[in-house]
Image 1 (tube, rainbow, N blue to C red):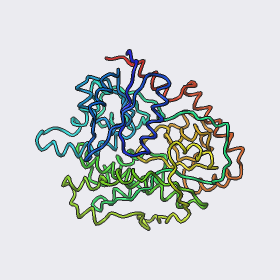
Image 2: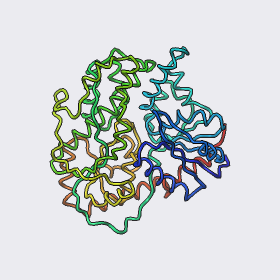
Image 3: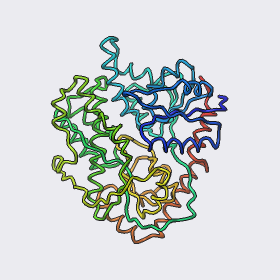
Image 4: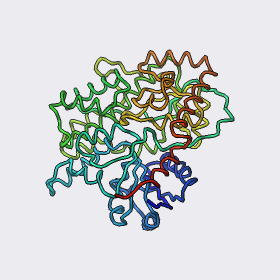
Amino acid sequence: MDIKKLCIVAGGFSEFDKRIVSLFHSEVRKIIDTSLIILEFKDGALYIKPEQINEISTSDAIVISGSAILTGMMEIIEKLKKTAFVIVDDFLAENGIRAINFIRINSFEKTRLSEYLSETINHDLVNYFFFDGGQAFYLSKLNILKKKIWHIPFSCWFGIENTENYDDQDIDISFIGNISPVYFSPKYENLFLKCFFDKLNDLQRPAFEIFLDNVSTTEQNISSENPIFWMLYRHISWFFINPMIRTYIIGNIKKKVVYPGFDLSIIHQGLGRPLIHQISESNILSPNQIIENVFLLPEKIGHVSIPKLENVIRIDFIPYEMQGKFYRRSKINLLITNAGVQTGISPHVLTRLSAGAFFLTDPRYELKEIFGECIELVTYRNIDELNDKIDYYLSHPSERRDIVMYLREKFLEFTKGMTPAEILVKMIRNFSVP
């Protein structure tokens, strides 16, 4: 496909998101003529300005940064007949939002949920870069994904930084990420608790794999054709498992953890209308069943005690462009990756490697595929192993440096010396229209 100009389209959820996509745009622009459009959200919907439509129309193809933007872009894609390439991050979770739309539409058009989801996913003009191979596998398994996709087992959000000037490391342990409020529905208590316990007992096991097993046994086998199936998964993975696993791990570290928090605009916009409220508005559950049982950081979940995060040192939010320096200041960067992502290498791993910063991470199926057995040096599977490795590496600075440089070399060996942005452009240029 003869592509000379790309247009990257992203959603403006927050200033943090805008900084990330701007950095990605600058990486891609080094290789090919590329413009950037950041869409705004008004009243819960994407707002596309006329001049932005004109910019898209003059491009040879669109790169959509995240599956959440795809649905809102479909009308433009079809009208302009533009080939779209979607960098897929959270398709499984986003089906929870699509299920809500299905409920609203299906009162007029009687169609199966899988057919409704399939219309967007399998559109002739839409193509995917799944860095999360697990999501593609599960979508195919549930007969939703019909078309061929490209799988690259790492995120495209990555640029190699100059790490010659290694900063003085004045922070022992740090964590950057969102620890959000926890939402809980008593009607599905057994499902919530079983998924949480299973993830806690096996951090490597994908959240959707756990959910699939438990939803078929714990909750009377809710079918994927039922909208509540997708709503519950998004709710359980993002608003329950993810914050609770992070809270449990961070709170059980024996040493102090420096936490810059998160961009508050994400909290205001992303959690202002959590999915659990949208479920109640869909009349699947009554509002009273939900609102009365919203809580933040409970003392206990089942038999598991939840720590109060008294070991956390809260500091001001670090702007994205300054985070590379913050990573290098930290002797150990703690990674507790998003539960909603099933497989593949988290962008958090790549940003630390890019910055030349040492990290400890929860495991993923595909980490050894790229890094080999050496990845076990920075992997933890339970809180005891994490505390032991923290103690060891805090007293071995040269070993920390050697390991992260070796891992970075292994990654570039796997990519044949190309950055993810270069690989993305190469794959798009090699794309052939069926």
